Image (cartoon, rainbow, N blue to C red; front, side, top):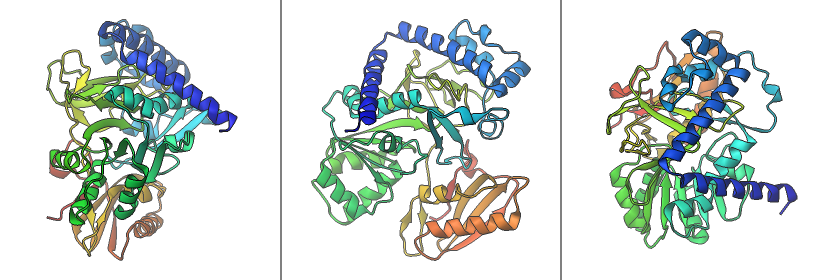
Length: 429
């Protein structure tokens, strides 16, 4: 093992030990710690990020006004559009050397680039590690298998690029199902991490091909909503347990479903989570569904404070606000080819994000042989060039010839009055 990698392994192990200690803090001590971190991160944001200084001054907020955690509602909401289009104005990001730029998968039709400093990345790697999973689930976990989006700027695969480990294997989520089964049976992982929609497709493949006796003690899903049918089928076919994780590129891991199924345990030593109404006011009662507002307590280079851009909704399960009920939203539709083959939506969204000049987008399938691509362009984008580029990238992502219709529009419609814009929408029955 190279010296640099050994040093990084040691650093991640140290961060894991810190995470383990913080996870065991009492409720009172956790709240005290959160307030300390919130005061520090807002002061750093005020001093270093011109966008925050201007926005907060207009709202009449200054970091010195934070006396209790309840004072967080004095901080104005940060939207996804602001994070994408205004946040970096006036900043010299060329000095941001020690870290990595990450990009969201565009699950709401608008993708965002985020800088994560190395010290923040080390904390995320600690939470992703088999050490943390073993401690959290109170079981032996030594080998992990990740079927995720494998891109250098993806949060999910960050561990594979930052800290290669023979006991934690990263595989492309679009790996053919027969090869996926071979990898699972040969590697014999203690835990698999993947997306619910891909897991659902894998389970269907196993049923159709009568594949049995594949043992996976623990499965963790993230990125989309896990439906109960898929949950029950996974438990039956893999002979283990399945748990939801809530993690996003903007702030990292947020919550993880507890071993006893009490709810999603908020990782409140690294983030501050609120469930708010449309005006950004925190909801007080249990089981009240509202918008998720999140603050990253660890990223001191590109702080994300009171961010509403996740587009998800949830409710707290207890008055201490340490447990969440299942996340609402984050459900994706699958595109079907004329031959009935499933095309995972991330395969399409990753291609469309390579095209410059797009504000928002949506991929619609109304007929089995064609796709409609709705694009809200930047004001200075060339319409003809934009259409050609989108068409080219979409065709590169499709396994067979399908008609691709690109439409430039002023706004993206919402499906079934959803609270967020879906990236991929299927109208097929």
